[in-house]
Length: 275
Image (tube, one colour):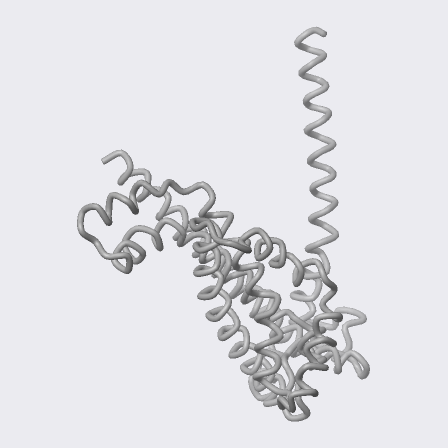
């Protein structure tokens, strides 16, 4: 095959790939973009555009029910993230660096909460809580969220550890550093990108959860996704669009900062490796 024909074939493949990617991104992000645009719509129901307004953003901060559910969701998500990342880091290091009886079984069991449908896990936890008399509320939701956040955290951090060289840790301890000093100064910086990725994933899974939160929430408070689900019967108000727009912008900014921090850490490690 001549170079010109090969070049044309590659160009055609690139064009098809670009069109396919554009179609996927369009399906994924056009609804989000429409929702963000309609958060500025001067109309109670988002059937048509009726002029620009910021009244829904002003009304959002006076809606005590929505703001209360938001803070309730954020508190649970932050706690679930801290618990999941802490246990996930310890678990990932133990499973990756040490050989012990039952290691393979634990590795396989990690994928059960990931594979099993969430509704099954939620019903199982609900039965357990009812049997032991555990009150439904923030505690039950937090435990439920940790059941699926911890496996994701372990798998994410373990994937980051798998490519690490342990010679730096051994050299650190040979020079007199304790295990704690070695962990803080050598191990943690090397796995920090994986820890941050696990934290972002855990936070996103927790704050976005509907099934587990709906099954395990008490009568007094509900998380934001559960509140939005209940609003769906009577119609979601435009201030929810405003809230979602703000949350999306915060997440995008956080992702950009996370990428910059990870890139800076990679450059630092390369420089330290050269030196």
